[in-house]
Image (cartoon, rainbow, N blue to C red):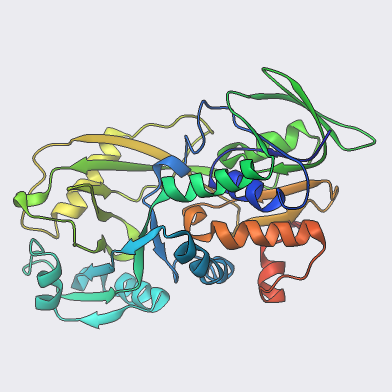
Length: 356
């Protein structure tokens, strides 16, 4: 028997495995052949502390020092641009993310392909950072393994049975017995809950598409900030000498290995092109990932209201990487019966009991 059995090997599951490995024995089950295959491995990987709902922002703030200690952050910056037609959305985003207004020439000094004929406003935040997602995942994995955790890949869960002593979880390879079950299955969290006889909470997996294009106009894009359109209806971000452009789509999907929709990508690239002077002439590659949200778009962290042996670690949406250190620590504190340094109202805002 293991003390803690975690279903899901994305950033939610592996960070929780690292934390709980200090409390007892841990087994993590991942259906794919490697960790972070789905949403976590396809993240835009930006740390922006003011991005998300209030409880998410609290987790972001509490995660910052852990990210620094793990040495996974590098400077990027965030630039928001807008037009007269998008003034309201621009103002809302600027206020939400606490961006400083800058002049158009200042914005063009950062990204020289911005079209002054289309754009009439800009705002900037220097304290936005790239996250080395692979290093973050492997740091948590090393900690978990060093404390004796078992990480089992290619272990698709086929049945879950509640017992007097906890849970029996059957996979394609073996059956595991655990005292406590942690549901960190990303887009599949409601599926896992139903298998365990737990009422689903109404999570929605949403597709997010990405296109990778050559550096526009042959520019060196390595120091360009991340570029946001108002209302987050597209964004662009440097990536290994090229540029990632996303339509920031959120199309509901059933949980599966998602792929980009060509029409959605074309619409997003057109929105990006409307703000720059360099057209998109070809794609290097494209892909998609899932962003899974609870009904209120806030993470769900803690024991199920009907069974305290079933722990939710779900609804990371687009905030999983940046919030993982604090989210996993909160979950560990709750399981250990320790007070959390997070404000009580934020802890309550993250609890599954809010849905009862």
